[in-house]
Image (cartoon, rainbow, N blue to C red):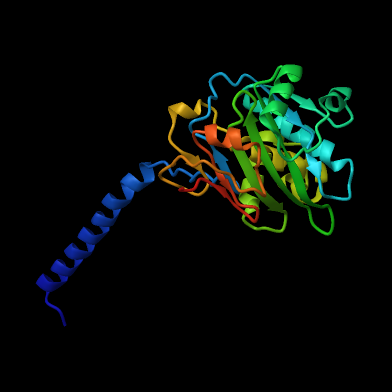
Length: 275
């Protein structure tokens, strides 16, 4: 049997432990829990040396499509246009393949352009840059999947400003949190009982989600005012004088005059590289 003195000491130590626990928990209760920002979607590249300050007018060419759905190209192009307009980075217009102005450009190859073609595009469209590319995969059933490759090129000097290459697969669990963010910001209410899960079943809602993710990879401020931007977390950008031939072959003259470029890998990634 413990003596009264030992019992009192044990009770005192127990009270001290409880008091210590309360003291430690009080600051935590007053703290604000901040939800970590979601990582940027996919693989993209922004040229830190590009002149975004004077890039005021941008035209999006209807995306080329390797899919069997002829209407999907125009639908996704429209969704991306609307998403970019919401960013208010620059004035934006869209040029579809059925437009007479597109036929007037008489472009033989829509995957790359020479400096002369870029000059002609700038003169006729009165734009500073163009966004173009292709839809490499589209699957509405049994689950929604979209893959594309886009580039933004300065019409004044032929430099690559921005590029993205990514696959969006609705079965990818990593997309769910980003879908919820998109739904809360862009759709919010009126879609019960599905709510954000509507994106998993509606091709139109899925297109808007894809366009939302594409648009938010473009910087909201001039690239000269911020550090290197890349989904690959690269610390240094080094000047290189070439692009892979199978992706972006504008002209040799243009490539030699480019002060900064990005390596675009055709499989899954777009990222800066060292020469």
